[in-house]
Length: 102
Image 1 (cartoon, one colour):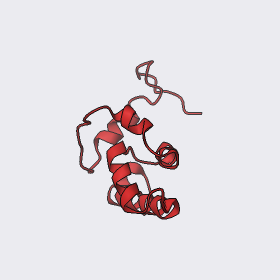
Image 2 (cartoon, rainbow, N blue to C red):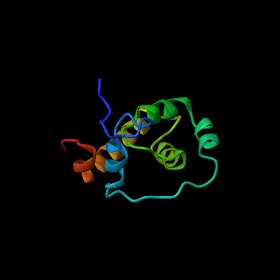
Image 3 (cartoon, rainbow, N blue to C red):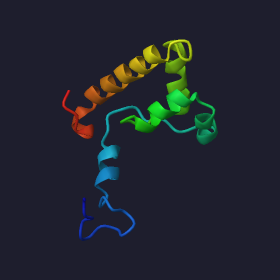
Image 4 (spheres, rainbow, N blue to C red):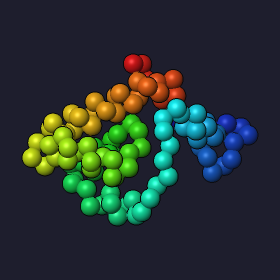
């Protein structure tokens, strides 16, 4: 179990490391628009499950766009494979931040 840093805020068990690491990312930042939890709840259950296990934070809109373009409910295996491919590509581009061996 990870222990908080001695001088860390008691509300942050990671000692601020997680937040600071995420802010150093080179990936494009976007402001959230609309009701993202409502959009998430309307996603197909297979896609919601994939998003819950994803390494990166995905917006419901971008995940759904890829899902539908890659086959979606007609071919969920192909859609999930496409999402995995895109996520691996994004992780590779920003590997030093996410500590992933590309």
